[in-house]
Image (cartoon, rainbow, N blue to C red):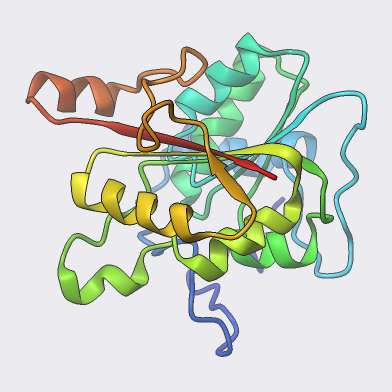
Length: 234
């Protein structure tokens, strides 16, 4: 069973930190999600330990996704790329439970999940220069101007990610809020050690390896745009 720390509804970040990787909105667990958290966590979950770095298989590229939601697209990516190892971080327990169920259903051996703040995981468990790719898809846009400072994509956080990426590692971001896309582009353009992979030095077409989610399809049907950005560590 997951430990008490993961079951906490208030995993606060230390007061010195100004960036949080999430806003905790705990929904109600279905019976299947609750069973998955209890029964499948020992098989596919990784507990947070501040002094226990994760050892990635050097023979396979390591991909980290921050905020995988219900996990559908992450599971599809792992299923389509058995030659890569995936780690997903999500604090929304119904999403973690749903993802665990999908991992079991698809019999995946290359995807593990964590239920903890991604900032602390990056700081304390991800070795420097160990990741081939970090992806953050559709993070909370905090669209009100007075809340923009709460957005996860900020200079300090981007540099933390850069420390964890290998040389030529990729940071892939996606959002369906144009204002946030512009904010992401500005932050990454000014970030030391990154180079934009866009031929036009702004956004890229959706890569084929990023699945279109039901949420995204619904937005497209309503005429909403989606902006993808990819930057490489130099």
